[in-house]
Amino acid sequence: MQLHRYKTPAASTEETRGTRVLGRGWRRATILTATALTVAAAPVAIAAGAHANHDAHAASLGDKAPLRGAIHNPAAGAFFRTTGIFANFNSWTMRVQNVGSGGAAVFGCKAGSNGSACLTAENNNGGLAFSFAGNGSSGGKILLTNSTASPFTTNAHGEATGLNANYLQGKTASDFLPATGTAANSTQLGGKPATEYATNGQLLYADVAGGKIVNDRGASTVTPSGEDFIVAFNATDVSKCAYTVSPTGAALTSEQLAVEPTAGHTNEVTVNVPKGFTAGFDLQVIC
Image 1 (cartoon, rainbow, N blue to C red):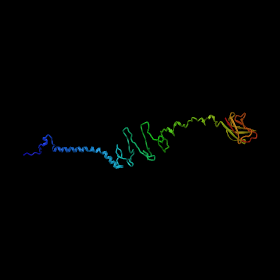
Image 2 (spheres, rainbow, N blue to C red):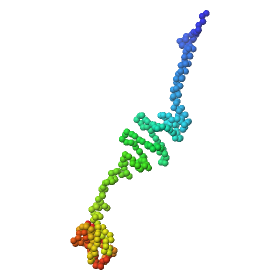
Image 3 (cartoon, one colour):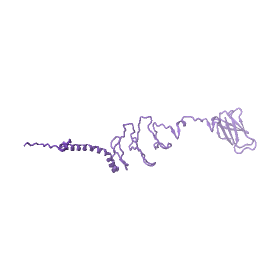
Image 4 (cartoon, rainbow, N blue to C red):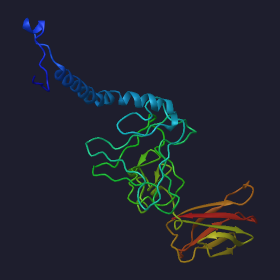
């Protein structure tokens, strides 16, 4: 008798009918293939549920949820305390840069009028608190809903180098008179030109009492001569000026004071008084 290591089974009824039945070797191959497909499909299923699992996990962690890029942080809701990022070296703690055509960062808040500012830059040393740089024709904008509100305030009174303030209290620079300029109506006073007023050099006067000058502008001496008083005005020619004289104190009840240029003396004026007149008089000369 000859023994064989492998025995070939007899054909089954299905084989006789044209249907092939897999043997033990085929069943083993089928099991291994199914296992490999299951292992290969597992990462796909894990990847598909990764975000959902993270979101649920982050929501359960609350403030302890880790920060992740390109998603909402935290995955649901909002943090309930400050998120700090600290560094200890001689450069920026954090850099936010967009290599595309969009912006770099947006800071938004709902702080009230007495709340914290949406953006605060504080330098506890002697350097700058902020610096802006750009390549455009405008450095930036400060836009307020209330257009009449102040764009910003400061307690510093130093010179803002390079700042061109076109408006001052709602007026442009052209509305103000330069330091060495002349006002358009500088030749008028009370709506009248300066030529209608006498200047200091044109207005001369002398207050005379007791035969003496007690107050004057341009007068030098007074000389009694009978019922006349001759008033001299230094070397000023007053021969062609206008004269006005009035008594000091009560008005005269009879006769009047008279005034005229002194003959032969262009710098003198003669005041004629009534006989027995002892009061003083005011003499005004306008040239």
